Length: 240
Ligand code: NDP
Image 1 (cartoon, protein in one colour):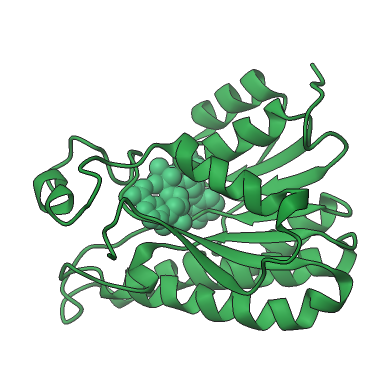
Image 2 (tube, rainbow, N blue to C red; image 1 turned 90 degrees about the vertical axis):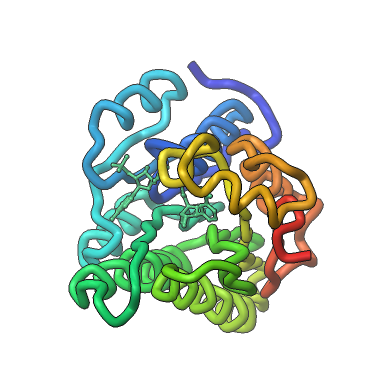
């Protein structure tokens, strides 16, 4: 069912849209009238459920697979909005964490957004939007055990800064949304790190996926055309 809303007529791709923050972003854009494509890694049941609910178009595309990412972006046609959301975390001491796991994290969290954005930029319409879901850990890392993740979330800051220069002449904006703890499968609000995380927050709870989707919708909308190359933190005060 086609809905009418702020994003009617827009062609949008969300990577990692089957669960968590990505699913909330898919819902938000679909509810506001967009044609939404999304990718997922392997959870077909979750992808099918979101697709059935929203009418969005799923595709199983591993963000670590550069050729598959670029082929899928190209197959979506001229995009108005790209949201690079797919991401993973690996906890562990850098002296013992498996190098293969770290390489895969970098491939998903850094190379995936880079190549998706580069490919999308070829055909993206003027005044388009590229959004990357980074993390407050791109700015600040209050816990041990997440070094590789922090590296990856700092790297996408450089991606947004550079691309904003490359694509600005076409009116395309590039921004990073940096959540703090958000209640998803990756970081459940009732998980073992709850007390430690909430101790560092000004707002003593996990964020909601809809709150992150609302920031994405603002940055993707017509009122945000002069905002680019910037980081937008939504972290309950974790970095305050
Ligand atoms: P979830 O683990 O809840 O969901 C991850 C989503 O990304 C799923 O749709 C998953 O697909 C997809 N995905 C994972 N790996 C790949 C891959 N290799 N290729 C394609 N899709 C993939 O994560 P969140 O919603 O919590 O996180 C989303 C983003 O937000 C990430 O970039 C994360 O780093 C960032 N973030 C999250 C925070 C949090 O506290 N939750 C805080 C700050 C940032 P499938 O269902 O098939 O597994």
